[in-house]
Length: 362
Image (cartoon, rainbow, N blue to C red; front, side, top):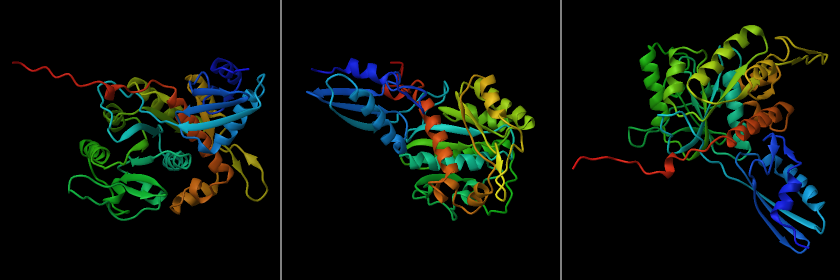
């Protein structure tokens, strides 16, 4: 008895992959099905990095396909193919960067930079080529968080080589100035510096560039959103009302410039006392989830108010690398997988497939 692809896809349609939020068949992840007697080979192609859950997916596929009549053995092969996704109209996508994801907040102090660093490291741990652009010119923090010092090299005097640690490429104005030196620049100079760091850095074939956006929703943030080719954005907030007010402004800003919001992350969600284990919602409860529901975007996850997260970031070894098997690291990795899974389901960028049409007078 031969098993065809349709029967396998029908069997897999009952499995809702947790990161995608839909079945593998709906996500068009089932690429080939080959049957040889009682043995079936299933090839899956996922559009987001998730190597830590490949065994889980494989086990589930074997279970479902193995339950079909006549099937005794199931082989599963999982590959990842990350493609560029569409960006704002009139903004050109970068050649060596497939997807730019902006991590933003409406206000400072909500842990946006720490979240951005850990998400980048989580994506790298899941198998992607990742970079971080520190867009907070006035308060760059990524050099310290990523444990990097010194100045970037410039082989040609025009471009900069990214600074690398933990397998992640980075660029920040913090590499060009002393750590305690303030950046006393007006808006146009700041925007120009950011454009230079973005376009003049020799990024090496990135699947994702995480942009740690400056806090707020002023002229600088609007200019960045309109000139940087962003495939998706993430809003970081804390649960309390005052933070949510500003987070809503950040979300609405991205909507105005046609940048999809991939979801909301609630930081400092709950505090567990290290002495007695008492759990307390210091800044309120479920604010991020309620905001996501209000604006019909995904709630990507909640992170605890944990002293270790701060200590590890201050020490130049963020949580995902300092404690890779810990509970908090697993939350970051789950958020990173879900974030990029949502992006993988959005329209792809076909701009590179079409030639430029040039009209010349003769």
